[in-house]
Length: 328
Image (cartoon, rainbow, N blue to C red; front, side, top):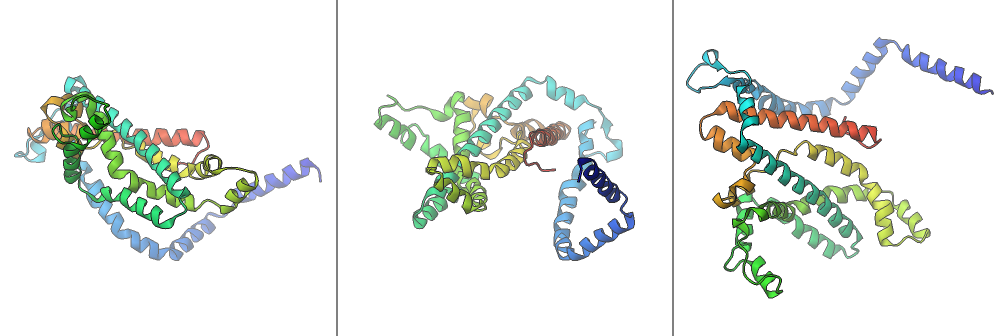
């Protein structure tokens, strides 16, 4: 059969697909809904929760365009247009806060992904199940600690007098005298990044271990037959096998690039490192809510939301162009 005849048959099949009766498509959709009615009923409470707590409060964004006063009715509020947004982007303090937020978010993003993937790869290579489970359990236990407790542990470990970090460094003769870790701004971003790794690395590893278990074992067998060693299997089989999971998580985390955190910066921060520790969330609390300037606080929140949504769509588009997995 010639290529021309094949081309005609393919075009005919495509034309038939395009001319499917819409009523058939509707009936198939209803049939699918009926088959999945249990799942739909189970998702109704979640949908209601999202509508009430995530979408209904959006009307409050109007405060960002007003000189909002809590004592006045909504109809009597003074409209200010984009005044609050102009103030944000002309304020040196907000620019400093934005710098801190982006820097700490980037550090958390890089360290979080790198450490979680490395730990998952190493745990996957452990053959003694008891030891593997013990290490995994110890690594994700800090996740269940509140940041109040975690920050207390970090502050105690970094204290000048008897902090374990200074003691170890002095015993190893890496430093001659104790360092005031929490009193110098140049150390603060690194402390936040290390603290996030310590607290979340085990929890973040779980999803990568789950992705590794879904890799076809025959791939490892074929690699062994080709003479691949352990590190070669990790490089050419395991890492490509979890690439899709990594890309999806990366897209989702890029959307939180302005969520550098609040608790640890607020708890470990002090007047000596204020220029390095303040994030957008602390700025909103300090200069917005605490001072009763709810319009400014709302404007900062809108800025975070819009940037997050735009970044998610950009990352998703780039992943699509590169042929990787994507959210939508």
